[in-house]
Amino acid sequence: MLPTDDLKKISFTRSIRDGDLVIVYERHDVMKAVKVCENSTFQNRFGMFKHSDWIGKPFGSKVLSNKGGFVYLLAPTPELWTLVLSHRTQILYIADISFVIMFLEIVPGCLILESGTGSGSLTTSLARAVAPTGHVYTFDFHEQRAASAREDFEKTGLTSLVTVGVRDVQGQGFPEEFVGLADSVFLDLPQPWLAIPSAERMLKQDGVLCSFSPCIEQVQRSAETLRSKFTDIRTFEVLLRTYEVREGKTESSQVEGGGSVELPPCKKRVRSKQANNTNGDSSTVMVRPCSEARGHTGYLTFARLSSTAMSVSQRLSDTKTS
Image 1 (cartoon, rainbow, N blue to C red):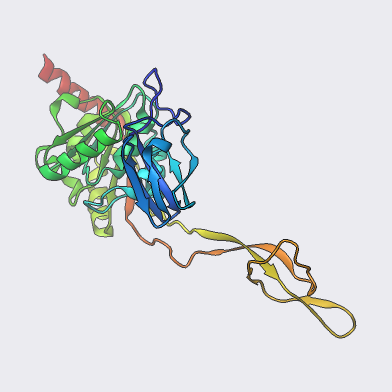
Image 2: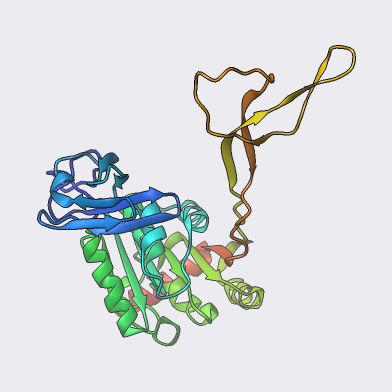
C-alpha cells in the first residue's frame, strides 16, 4: 500500500512495516509487488529472502538473500505500480499519465470523475495527485473489473481517496449527485461522444475534460460533439523514446606520422582495476536509443468547458433544485 505516516499522510521516508506492500526490484524490467508478512519468505533466482529481515528497513534498501544475492525494496509509487499491476485492459503508461495530470490541471483537493477504470493504472496516479483532501470517483460498466480494481486500491491503501462504481456512463451518464462539482473529467470509452453531454453538466466553470482514444476516428467524432459546449479543443499523441546509457571504451590506433585515431566505441570487457592500459584505450559513457520502444498508445483530446455552456448548465441545475 502507499505508506503513510502517523498523520495518515503519504510518506516514502518511513521504515517498512509488517503488512506493507513493497516493490521487489531486480532490474528495470523485473519487478514484483509483495505484501510483507513477518513469517513469510520470497524466493527468486538470487535465493531466498526472509520478510522478517525487511521489517524496519527504509524503503530503497538493498537486502541480501541466503545465497548472497540481492534485491531492492522500493515504495509502491504509482509509477512502479503501473509497471507491476495485473493488466485487465489496455493501460495508460507514465508518459500519457503525466501528460493527463498536467493538462487536466489536477492539484490536491480536486474532485475527479473517471469513466473506464480498467486496470486502475491512471486512477492510482490521479489519487496521489488529489491527495490528501481530494477524491477520485471512477466508474466501469464491467462488474468484475470494478471489483478487481477495488481490491487493488485496498492493497495500495487508496480507499480513502478512490471510490469505484459500476455504471455504464455511455448510456446512463455520470450520477446526478456530481452536477457542477467536478474539477476534471477523464473518459476512456469506446464511444466517448455519448458521455460528453453528461460530462459537461458535471464540470465546474472552466473545468477540463480529457478523452483517451486509440483511433483517430473516435477523436474526430468526439471533437465534433465537444465543439458545441467546449473551447480550447486540442489533441495530442505522446511518443516516448528511451535512451540507454552504459559505460564503454574507445580504442586508439596508431597511424603513420605518430598520430592516433579513435576507433568506434565497443562494449567494455570486465577486467581488473589494476590492469595496465597498454593500448591507449579510454573509458567513455555511451548513449544510444533503446532497441525496444513503445509506439502509439492512443490520442489524448482535451477541452475546456466554455463559460456560456456553464451558465446554461447551472440554470438547469438551479431549476431542478427549486
